[in-house]
Image (tube, rainbow, N blue to C red; front, side, top):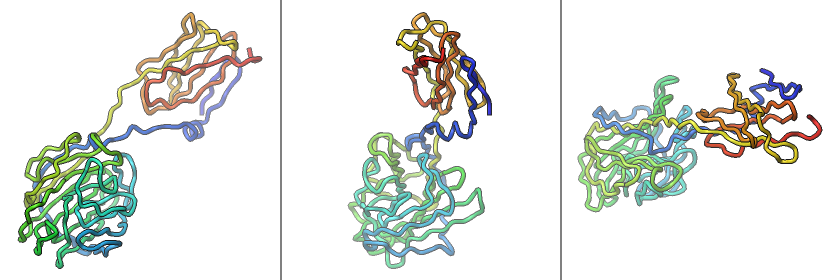
Length: 332
């Protein structure tokens, strides 16, 4: 802990308490910041996986029960431990899917947030299954959800595609991998491939423009008519971005008990490491701190020979323009 003084009175701050009480907001990692890396590898069918039975619906339009990831997986800055898959080629995080939506719509549809390796009107073939498995050891475990021997479109009687979603511990990377099957695909197939966040609209999804070896990904325009099978061993890897927020400014005013601006008062801004910056008020009591780091909680204190002021503990996540201090009556 450390101590700060104002007008002869000592106030003790214990950082654990201070930070528990201060409302801090983590800078979110939006879906639009995820980066796509296409590559080629090997599709390896799961061995020893848990084969799921439907919670509702059927093999054409069905929802599977919650499956444990086996570790904490962070997606769009929220930690999840469970997922729920649907027959139509997508998987949602956190709760049982509330819809088996076959109408692919990464920008607004489905049970969000979700990942969609091949979102279309699919059906699990008589030889197919949906299963999951967690492999490896902490902190490098991998969760895999597998759609094996899927019929694409629903009115095709033979399996034409298999695919997996892999979730990686620690890196929070999402990976799609595919294997072509011998069956044909029907006309009318119009799939989407990509990610979707909790929110809707532009910036809240990432959509591949094709199922080729080197597609691009857009957070503004969704491609909903993908019809070609991804190549066997085709991998699409999505890596969460790092959002670096620009530093901000903090400004306000120091006032006397009757509301007049107090000139020449000293403002102290103290961060969690005890580093202190100062700013002196103008003739009419205004002060300003520039280049303030966001995501940090600060103690603001006024020093004045004439008046006493209560310190304020503030979490800074954006520009703050009305951080005002009014002198306490009877304490000067």
